[in-house]
Image (cartoon, rainbow, N blue to C red; front, top):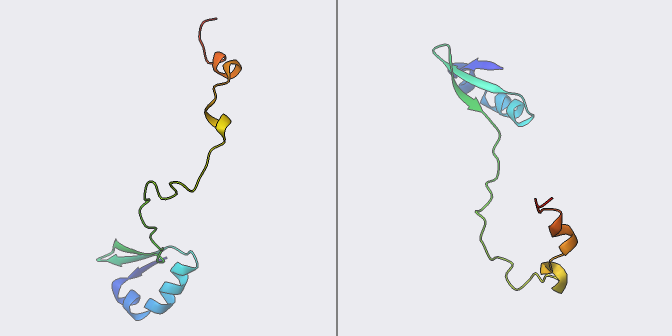
Length: 77
C-alpha cells in the first residue's frame, strides 16, 4: 500500500496496524517512495563469547579420532 506523507500523518494509527499485521506500507514524498513503515523488532544483545564457560561439559570421547571415519576423507585411493 502506498500513501502520501499527508495521508500518513492523518492515518498513522491505522497504517501502523496494517504494518503490524504484515501489510507493506510505503510513504511517498513528491510521488516517490520515501519511507517504509515497519513494525518494531526487539534487538538482540551482541553475543558474549565464553558466556557458558565451565557450564558445559563434553564427554571424554568427544575428541577421540575415529580412524574409519577419517580415512574416508583421504584422497589416497
